[in-house]
Image (cartoon, rainbow, N blue to C red):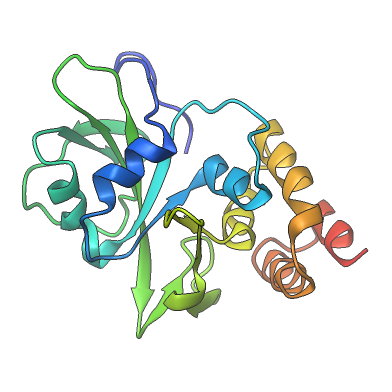
Length: 203
């Protein structure tokens, strides 16, 4: 979604290490997502970040309130209006983004993303035909930090193709396996039709 800044305030994204410390106690699945997930897959930092994304399954959304107990949580109602997310409130299917900060007036630190799941499979928000087993959705670093598989993150990024998305794709392409390239090329073609990334993935 587009960045919602004024009048909601600025960001000071938490680090991957800080996020991992906050979410590590959860038994529910979660993953570092967004540009940081691509950097973790690539193995190096290569660009700046306006925020940090953490992906959870919609069915586990209240686990985020436990992980960030004492924080403020604000849901982004489409098309982009923030409003407080009440404790224990189950967000409707159309709400995917939640902004989080340690307290009133503090800078925003973490953005939560909610994805769908069905019968043990992740279901893409972009195209419900795109699915994969939950145990293949992420990768774990040597330090034990889970992050979204790069091909899954790039499937989302293929829609907008902002400069940062192009940068992420270019950086990730050399580290994608043949299987990851094939999956991404097939799902991009299915979801978006003809796309500049497809030939690069198959080439």
